[in-house]
Length: 78
Image (cartoon, rainbow, N blue to C red; front, top):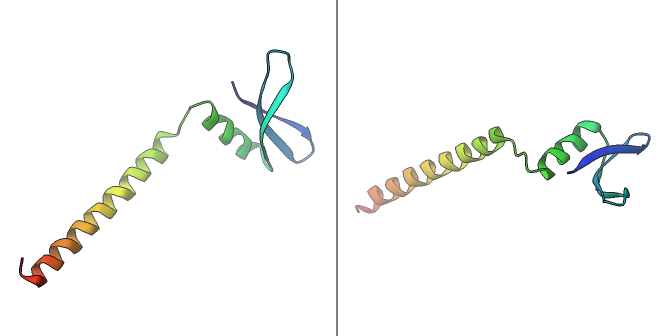
């Protein structure tokens, strides 16, 4: 399991502990919030709201593309 910790001021490191107790760093962050977000993602706990937002954006783009294609077909008389 990934965790984050701070080994020096103003630097938080995401990583995991090996069975021998040694910390294996994965990434460094300038705030604990950013480190926590990375750890959350690394542990497979994806934010469903982000996925839903991406689906909505793609859906809107598909709708716009369909409308433009229909308008182009109407102009061409198809």
